[in-house]
Image (cartoon, rainbow, N blue to C red; front, side):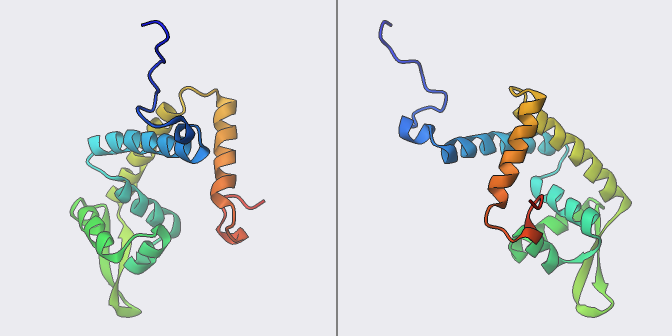
Length: 162
């Protein structure tokens, strides 16, 4: 049809929204979450499972409350995630010998294997998300996003200190 405007790639969003950095970051993040969800779901896992496994691998056995604080997850939600992981044999929960009121969560060998599978799947999702970019553009995007995400954080909490 002559004079018809092409359909906007983001549906019906008005241009004043669809051209903002926050809107574009949100759309890109949504696409990344969808890709990650699809791949992890195919392996019977969720992003929350991956996050807990990654915390335990990097920081070692931890109290449930400490895992919640690291990930910014509510304690009641964490119980369900840990139940899933324990049922699958990926973590074990034992009473903390120094404080028998709390559990220590540990990564099992099967959990370490599951984490390796998650790492590969998340890398595949990242590759699919960033496919339109050259390798140099990918590196630049990651660097810029780290700077944005770290803005205002104390140096000790930044992804990469300045």
